[in-house]
Length: 450
Image (cartoon, rainbow, N blue to C red; front, top):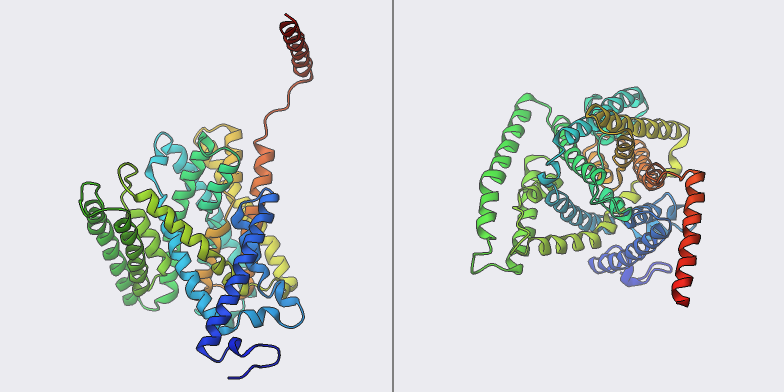
């Protein structure tokens, strides 16, 4: 095939070679944009991943698509988008394995009552408010874009999306504020882990409702899912403990890494075959991997998978961005965005704060937990993409929910700095401190003279 206009023949989209070359060019642009977005985010005191997410959205119709010449369309042709989608799914599987791997029951020790109360409140309240809002906004959904009949699945999905917390982004925010080893940070991480498990369970129910039209099909999927969970926890988990034991002479980093990658891919395939999303399988496999942080290669292998996910996730952000057109929201979309953002923040903050207070936590700690658990970030985008592909949310509501995910995460750092700032000293304390400082300087001068 010859060249078309200013596009070289090697970039023509009609051949396999042209598609491959276009994919290389597109990946270069995606990774460069992700790096630049990450650097800008750091300067703005935001997590790197937030800059990468914004960069991916900017490559879609919301920003790049507004430029003359259809630059976005040239870079991301349908065949290239299909290949990027495959890379995005692989990165997503790696990422969710890491999330499951970090779900550690040790976080619950010593504060089980507080964690349970805060987790329940910060899931139940936003879920209830979210489903109520979704029921009100449902007449504004584009029915032609929904892949199902009835409002049950879309309403339940929006409620589920409102109740999630971004575990990895939250961990990054805590580390940047030096709170990862403190009481509030540990409780927030534990609550985020519990909420993510609950949210994925709710999402599984929503997808079952959306994909099965008969009671028999629903029962079959429930039986298959139960069998899959039993195999994972009763067969795979002890098998992994035996196979990857430091006592095995044939063990080592290569075996551990291979078992992790092959296992998460097989688990992802299994849940996809059942009718659930492949992400569930990767997440659950990460949960069942035994934790042996001494005399083993587990942390090293998990870190290598995290690195692969970090390299592939910009493709996921770009695929998400190509589905988001903020310029097409219109008046209804703006009203929906304001309503969704208000309900999302109110539900999370009130749920976490009231849950903490009911468990007799101090008021200040309740405020911190309310701010932290409002971050949704990357985990929210994963859930929204699953909902979009399942046809339980239309493109406008998808864009609105993406805006909510970005806004709630971007506001977490500034709000945390405001809520968690140290108390200002009383003026008399400042005078006393200055007097002590003067005395210390005089003493030091006399010491040097002596």
